[in-house]
Length: 478
Image (cartoon, rainbow, N blue to C red; front, top):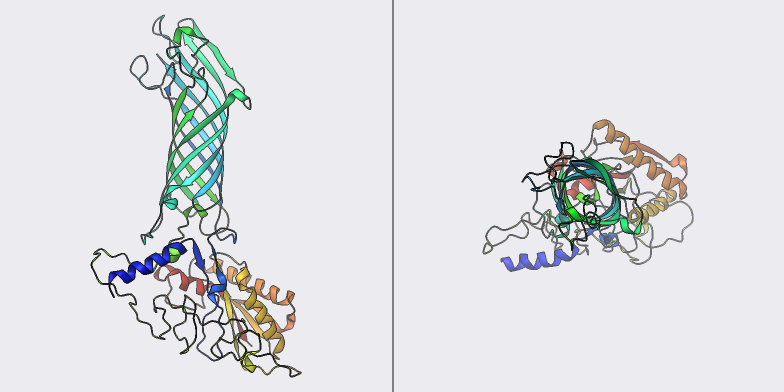
């Protein structure tokens, strides 16, 4: 196949970049198989399922330099730069992977004019100023790296360019100094109409680890006041810019962010394209032929083995986009073998309702299970039909079952053991709450010792769908 086929495939995939499908069950190689249609689990990419951390706190320090005023910090009257100091702390909330909000508090001091106010005035004409300020602002945070991302580059996502803009209220005291000494020139209180200010800028973040980010930031602050520097209309001797309406300054800072929450990843560091393109190779030569199915299509279901989550689909079975055979009524019998496709029924009766009284004879010794998000024991809404089916199956059988929890290979052995136990106990509680007798089930945690895909050790050796399949709870007859 030529490159044109690859382009068509890519064009079909791009609109789905903000969507993810979680297929909730795969074949165990026995008939009748239990499958769930993956199409039931397609949903827009959001953080409603709380798969990612979305809160953080940030703090930093830096240097403010007044650039536009009657008295400036950059190239003052003596041709020197006068450096002040600044610090900030903020509470950050990620709304999406590309946008968030910050409630930020800034404090600092600028120094401007002909000399440093810590020094003596060199002559009678020299005038200097310094301004101590406190500010509270609400900033919008745009993650340009995620907003502009169009392809997954198959590498760890560690650098991100952010843009910030917002408004707030500022309070300050401006001091003026000359040969006669220092005095308070202007004082402005916060939360007044005249104390509003704006700031905007950009920051470059580096992800040190899952908890800490390092960020260099440059902001431009518009004070909205011509007397912020200690000069202005009230001080005609140093009102060098008669049409000036705002003293503005740059603020360069270096800070860190601490990401809060129990999940592995933060929402602002999540790249949705990795869920679509982790199997798409970028061609260096655009004229090069492309082999669409590198590993072939063993079961001839139209889904390449590279992406196929069920490699042994029975011939003639309809499948979803992940190669999983469809089960329209979610009764545990795939449509190919289901004699009543739209009406649920026990597997022993070929998927049709039974009118016989008494217990159903148990022919299955193993039920399919459900998968979990990374570092989570929360039962996803998409798993509810499978669990309800398990309730009916267990109640109709005469045996008892073990609810077995498992994890992937990320994390320590001790942590994974506890996580697998929580997953198993959550599923057990759900089954009991929905009518299963407590004596028919028990919960067991196996940590990372029972991998569905043993080759995923370490997890980085496998695509995410295999690691997700390892993060599961399944059922076994005792």
